[in-house]
Each structure stands twice: as structure tokens, then as C-alpha cells.
Amino acid sequence: MSELTRRVLFALLGAPLTVALIFIGGWVFAAALGAVAAIGAWELVRMAKTSGSEPLEIPAIMLAAAIPLAVHANYLGVFRVTVTFGVLAFLALLATAIWARGVEGRPLVSFSVTLVCIIYPALVSYMYPLRYHDYTVGALAGTMLVMFPIAVTWATDTGAYAFGRMLGRHKLIPAVSPAKTIEGAIGGLVVAVLGTWIFAQFLLRPFAQLTLSPIGLVTFAIAVGVFGQLGDLAESLLKRDAGVKDSSKLLPGHGGILDRFDSLLFVLPVAYLLLSALLLPAPV
Image 1 (cartoon, rainbow, N blue to C red):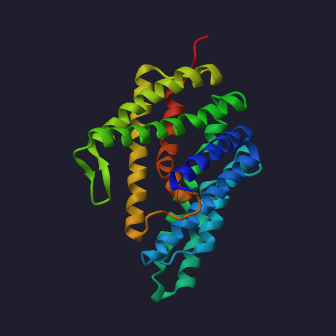
Image 2: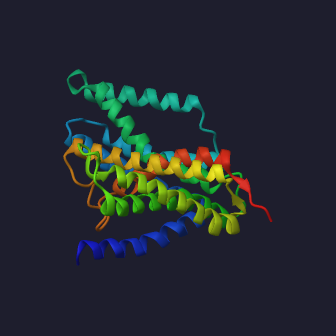
Image 3: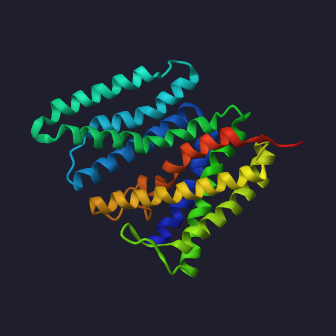
């Protein structure tokens, strides 16, 4: 089976499963996000070890997995995650790095890299507050709001690839990603605006009763397009530092979890912030 065939088959299976998990919501969705964050942390730890660092693998994986579950518990009102709770976790992790690594094991570097391995993949947790945003009513509306930045990110990636192949002449950052071009990056932003308008008009408005003003639409599209491409470049830089082509071989034809979520990890916090400020009720 060719790599392209594996990619297509995996996408055909993965896309409906993703939408179904978002629609189901609740602890099932939170557990799925926890699994994604845990695997992403595992991949990042492996990459960090390849580049010479010694992060704390088990704490990184466990804490990354716990963050989406903590967000879920917070929404249920089971307990409130306060700043003090985060500070205590921070201090516990620092103490663990100091005692586990010792002076010769560069404990500060170990702690810092472990912190990145926890927080970076756990940014996927922002899907949960999008799913249960105050502006949405019902599972379908929540699903549409989560899929909104995902669809625009996909449109950006597709546009950047297509325009780069057709018109690409000037390299964007060749030291990080030799295939990416300035023309492709601009084309990705153009397609992001188009994709945002299509999704808002034909999915967000009828199924979530929400919309964006013209200025809000362009602002959201450009922000998602820019941060999506930054996320892609950031992961390329991490892989180059580790000397690997893919974050792992977990997903057939797609590399690893971080390879699939790299753009979204940058997009989701920005999308949550902007949608909270820019969303409007759709006129009846």
C-alpha cells in the first residue's frame, strides 16, 4: 500500500471519528483530548532526548493527559483549577527535576524542557471550551464552533501548498522548511479568508446561529492563517533540532500526533480568544 493510499484511508476514518467525538462531548471528548495530549508529550520527550535533553518522561505524559481532564472537571464544577494549584504543580515538577537529575544532569534544562513537553501538546485542550462555549446551544452548535478553526486551518494549509506549488519562487524560511515559500504563505491567507466566509455562511450560521461581521471575519481568518503557519514552522524547527523527519510513525502516512496537530496547537488558543470577542448572533 502506497503512502498516499494510507494517508487517504486514515483521513477517511479519522475525520468522521473526530467529528463524532466532538459531538459526543463530555468525558469521552475530554478523554480523547487527554490521549492526544499524552501521545504528543511522549513524542516531544522522544524528540528532546534525541537532541540531547533529559526531560522527565512519565510526569510529562501524565500531566499533559491530566490537563484536558482537569478542564472537563472544571466545567462540571467538580473542582476549580486555581492559579495556586498551577503554582504547586510547578514547584512539585521543579523539585522532581532537581532531585531526579542532580547537578550533573542539568536539572534546570530538564525542568524547562519537561514544562514545554507538558504545555505544548496540552494546548489541544482549548477544543473543550470551544465545544462548550457560552455562545453555543446544543451539541451541534458546539461541534460547529470547534470545527470552525480546524476547517480554516485546513484551508490555510491547502492554499499554502497549492499556491506554493504553482507560484512559489521565494523561500520563506529555508533553514527551517525548505519547501515553504512566501507566495504559498500569502496564498494560504487568501484561502483562509475564503474558507472562513464559506464556513461562517453555510455551517456556522445555520447550525449554530452565529456569525461574524465582515471585519471580524477577515480578522479571524488572517489570525488563524498566520498562527497556523507559525505552528507548522515551529514544529518543523523542533524536528530539525531533533534530526527527525516525523514526530513519530504512529499515524499511517501522516507521521505522528504533533505532525497532525502542529498548526492547531498555535491556532486553538487564538481562535478561542477571537471568537469570544468577535462572534455575533446570526439574524433570523
